[in-house]
Length: 141
Image (cartoon, rainbow, N blue to C red; front, side):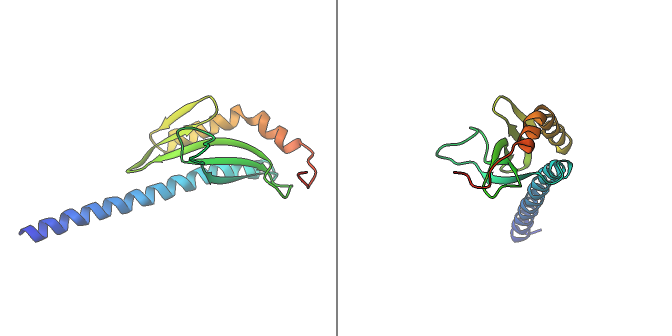
């Protein structure tokens, strides 16, 4: 094998690894959305969610890139609360860092991630039901 073939193989492996990482990150994002869609289903569509970037100037949670905002779907303006913040490992996807106002978790695989988010949902279930039950006027002023 000459130098060009070695170089070609090295670059090819690197690109394949990068492609696999992108696919894994996409899957992780989809897994998180699937869990949050369960909340939507189990609240009969009354509680939805948005995934937004964490503002770098005034972040809601310190160590995360994205936020999940749970919201009441029956109003025409964003009304709800920041549920969790999370970040995917930049180079590998996992570990995924998940944080709340009081807790921080590093999830090394899909099972741990699902368990952590389910536990947070359990802890915040009263807050979710209160959001669902609140009577809000359609105009925020």
